[in-house]
Amino acid sequence: MIILFWALTVGVIGKVLLAIGVLMAHTAIAHEHKIDAKVIKTFRTEHTITIIGISLIIIGYFMELYFYGLTPFATCSIELCDLLHTAR
Image (cartoon, rainbow, N blue to C red; front, side, top):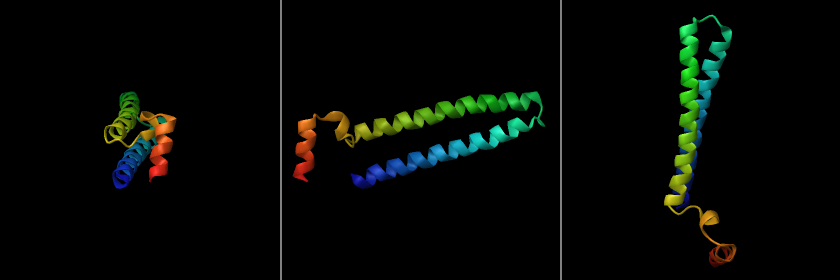
């Protein structure tokens, strides 16, 4: 289970970093204003879609953690969590 947790975590970090890189590149190009208004409008649309995509990736990540049972802090009481940690 620990490998699955790290695999999900690393995958999400990679996807988010990629999306942030795209946003940074296009934001820099949009600030130059050497591109016509139609391209700048397209960049703004892409920016919005990318933000929505990042949000969905993060929501999906937490849903996967919950599905695979990797969230004992969210699904057990304090006493049960203490019991689980002392049993290991």
